[in-house]
Image (tube, rainbow, N blue to C red; front, top):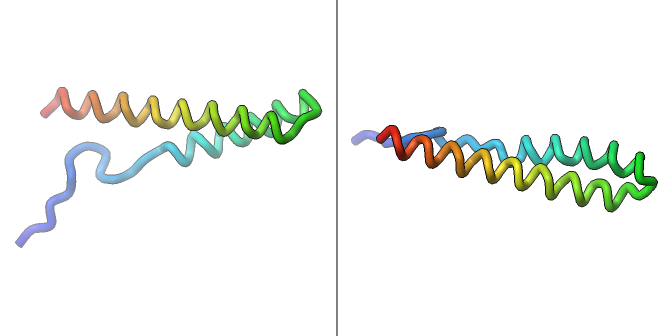
Length: 66
């Protein structure tokens, strides 16, 4: 019996990495705006959008190949 892995990115996602990058950007933005909470919120939102966009793009391209 074989354990079949799903095709595509083999279960790895980059959403968390993009959120972490967004938090870093948000921290810098928060310092610049003198409002750390708002900057972090904006950074997390930007990272989440970038991460989900990348995942959707990768999944669409992997479906075209099959």
